[in-house]
Length: 635
Image (tube, rainbow, N blue to C red):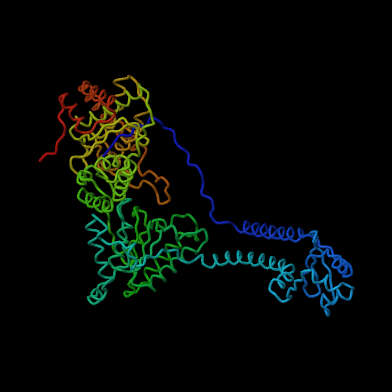
């Protein structure tokens, strides 16, 4: 499946924001502790200083006040007297401990009637509040100081403990008894050959004796390779789920830290944990982060990545036949892995996961639609036919986007129309209906897309057009979607040549109709140029250069630097000349088609200006009316 992306804007958006360190540093902890201590101390001083000073009077003055009837109540606490006057004043005094209050007042000449008129309260001096009131003023400062030093020592201890656990493995463990996170082969559609290969691993983990009895050596490692989104991680989890064993999983980048030796220590700890839990599976995702070819000359003798890789090699060699620990790894760059890592004896099995074919895509869609309420018009077979090149992750995103679209429109079920719209959203992004074009821009875009579609419909080896639209989607101002009549693994030179001509159809249409060109075909020119160069340098499709491969699929070294050219400047000039010739031939082919079918070009463009989007049925009516027969599958 191919499509045309017209860029009306070539501005790039700058990425904003950087991740901030989520963990507070040690200096911040000290500052916080000091501020808390100062705040508590200040509050204590304010509270303690705000207490009102109570005047103390001699016992003789108290006797006079009682005799004159000015006293309301007296609270006795041992030798202390808290006096409340009828006018609201509060004073304090002291008496002798040996004598009672009434005796003391009698000695000062106070009559018994006057004493009886005063409310006397006797407070015990052995209560909890009494002791707290006496102790807290002295104990609180000491408590604050102790708390401060405890808080500071806790922070230091935490930092020290992090240093001690730095070399421990960060692997996450999936319990085989956890039904919520358990995955089996029933949850993985497609990849029949890969699942058949991995069934032997499951059999070994369940019953290793039958393999050992016949003298078969147990595979130590399985490496899963394939395009992104093909289900490598899901398949590894399914193996653990089928076998019912613990699953230790982590990413290759989690081994490596800035300190030398940490990665190797984590590898040792990981394998130690797995051996204790045997039978078990260790899964390392994106193993190319640490498994790249050694000897690049970067990092010197203490390169942390190389030390981590060396430790993995040693641990895998150290396995005994009865260890019952399988190491699984996944990568989409098997070409950069160190030969010592993927040799027999370490990773004995190499399982390749391909993109799903039509039947597999239908099965994957069925799995992802199990928990979604589908309407009666749903046809997953049609959706599978319209999604060639989609990975399992793409299909999951498609089903999820369709459910989101239905929920956004307040519907309880997912309809076929939601799935159709989701295909384009996953491929190119959401519609940008706010991206309004001027009348002139809309006309240019319509002729541009009509040029692509018409060239694809006329040339014999181009795929048929399924949809043409001038509605902006993602970064594309418009697009032409064409799908093959049937899936194929191989593509011929003639098909590539017609694809290049189709990619240049928009460029030619703009130049032919308006006598000028815009920035719209920028993406088309890039696609056509890259395809032409690949034909010359990778696939031997040039008569001048011949069947010689002058560049690899990677095209870069293990450190992501451009590979030095392995051909002369004379060959480079011939390559450039051949690329230009192929592009020019495509331009001539497109010009011929559009010149001979100018009436059809105008009809398609006018209809696009009117309705903005043409589905396959409406588009084919227009070209049939202009004498062009649509491509059909030959039986």
